[in-house]
Image (cartoon, rainbow, N blue to C red; front, side, top):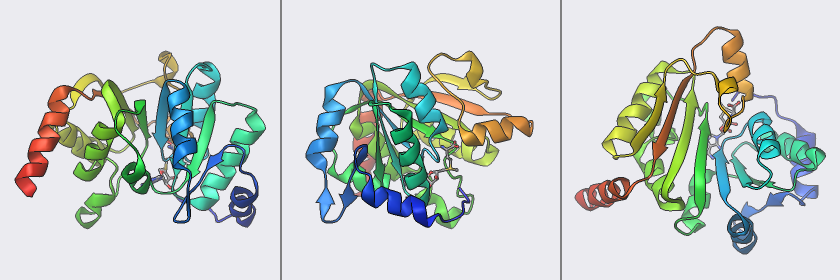
Length: 228
Ligand SMILES: C[S@@+](CC[C@H](N)C(=O)[O-])C[C@H]1O[C@@H](n2cnc3c(N)ncnc32)[C@H](O)[C@@H]1O
């Protein structure tokens, strides 16, 4: 996500902590994170951008909790301010890298993971940064409860094909697949900033819902054993 660096937003992160959990080397608020997750059925969004999606869905579903993790500090600061201003108590933010978070999280925590318009990283040498590359699929399978889903949307054809291939290879069960998707027709969804932009440009949105099954986990364990 290309965005202008906003010093106020980075400062906001440091001084407004009501809806933020820390993931710094010296202050990983694991207990607080786990208490929030354990309180209610909780969904995780990785890379929320400025939070349009999460604020809409959290307002629609007040009985669920929503945790977002955003890598870019300036974007995270803007998002945190929006969360604070919304008055919603069921959304919390972590400013940091999901991969780092996944290493401290226990198994079977989330009821769903949202991957909305993740950066496609088209160059082969950047494959590891794609949020649907094998190392990430392993972490999702671990933190998601069995039978829970990844909710995936993208505008990008190459990234979509790659992701579909990876999900199939790691035996995620495809519950839903649509290459001309309209989130306005779905109850359990909301439009993201990028989605609004691409829809206005006439670009088709690709959507997948993938279930974490016993087979998924088995495949991941077997693949790990093969590479060791
Ligand atoms: C292309 S933007 C999409 C933003 C939003 N989801 C939307 O659809 O409008 C992708 C976002 O993911 C964030 N991101 C990328 N890798 C991440 C990671 N490993 N952990 C957390 N956030 C990440 C980026 O900083 C960026 O804000």
